[in-house]
Image (cartoon, rainbow, N blue to C red; front, top):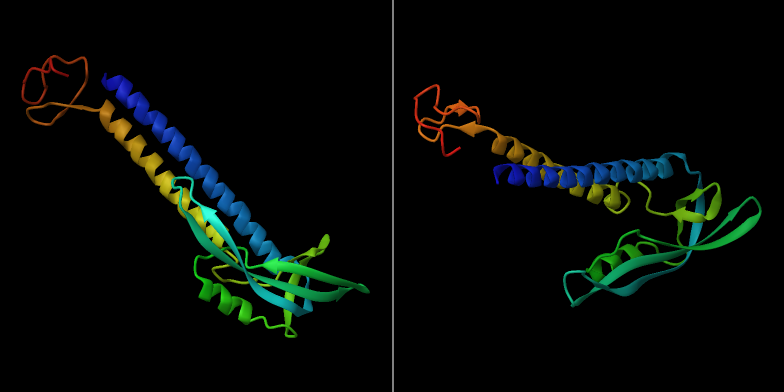
Length: 193
């Protein structure tokens, strides 16, 4: 019975540890992508054509209730290599706080000019909030946090499975080997182990 319990604990350790490592790898990849966008994509000055808050409903997989979520959407007009572009972009994350997204949209009023980054391979792929800020690095931070938690559970389960394999004398607490009949420290019978 103890071996089955230790085996199940080791299985949980592998599952949680593997998921944690995968999440940390995804955080590294997305963080590197955001850093590349911020440092290597060219920039261009663009004019805001329209800024608005968009609304959608989100439903949790654990619940039947829906939540109102909001995103700031900004439409930019810019010119690259003699060609005009009209491209919408969002904050990259949603919030249940309408005032938060309204403030974000209001900070980009129509007619204002802002520097944006664009993908040199696809000039319609733009970022207007590139920088060291929460919104731009939200996904990598979320994945990293989840990866740390899952990895922690994996290490905890691994430690627990190791503790299950270690046997101790019920009388004195001295470490013993499963095949021993008596504790080498206090000579107590070990038949119950």
